[in-house]
Image 1 (cartoon, rainbow, N blue to C red):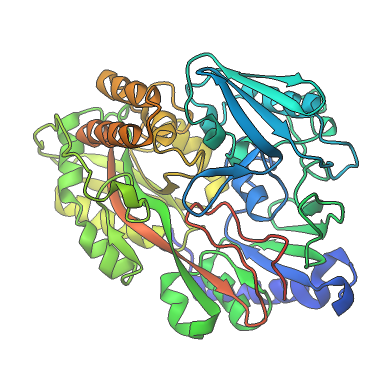
Image 2: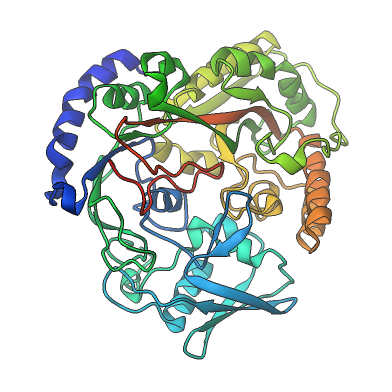
Length: 496
């Protein structure tokens, strides 16, 4: 059952006030000469004990804690990060030359340390989405080089290594168990010093960061799943940055306090192809036909979204005009009152409302629908294990690697690590595999669109809307990092 937003906001207000007052729990100097501390409200608490290999990887990246060998620029191209440069030695091997840098625990960033970090990522279970279908090995080469090889040719390896889930951590982060501890062991401009479960975290500036000293002295983070509470905290000057402001709250904020950013995020309805109901392609077709995406874009999102056109939205500019019509769709069958469980999460404030509208549309088409709404960290494992018939989720199509093909491999192939639809289709796997082997950028994009058509033809996923994310930014804040891939939020130039 959806929680009353206004009541939760009132309950959280004093908690937020206590957390963010006077620079928060960090106790770090707040004088102008040393830089002020930033107060940040994030929508998603750690879901996996801050492991860098899953959803928490993006949280660490957005807070400026972790980084990889490469990063993405505004156009989605790979640019240097911990690697100053790279060359392709052959179709399976790349040599990355490291810049001079140190870990936050004082150790040097060496080829051996980088190779070990990448090796740990390849051994993680489940595998990071960026490595879905990829067999990768990394070895030190001389005093500054790391040689990275793949079993099969991988023309987008520099893009892949920009993934937040392939961040480089020091040897001390790996204690011999399955747990990886990023606290104090990363390379970014801000160092985690304290994590209070799923409620708060404290970060201090890492003064020896290779990219220069950050202007903010630190960051005090509060994890606030309720979007109304995040917006209220910004409006009442309890926070400086509020992630994912609900569309319904935009009118309560001055225009100068909100920033809408086109993103590569698509909200979709995933249909569990192994459930008793949606293993039937005809019933998946019936569910797809029942959904009116334009009503969601204009109604729920009040124009801050576009009706779903495919897996890639308008922010993926090259996809426009190159979309291929879905192939092999089944004829819709009569639902005959079959009962399904539809799940979603409330960290992204519009999703429960989207799910409620979808529920009504499915019921009108003849399904009986039970709706379940939880906080994301309490929902993810059940969704991935197929315990729901249908799932409404928001997925950034270029988040994991910046490569349009990689997300298809992780989300829709038989071996995909984030396959919410539990789809395993021979034609889909074949189309994705073909796209993975293409080096030329334009041809690779065309192959991605052909694979998208195969995926949409199964009706395992119904794109609902392509989102614009609204970030709340305080009047004294400058330098917030807003990008369509949603990998960044705070950097060296972010200050108040």
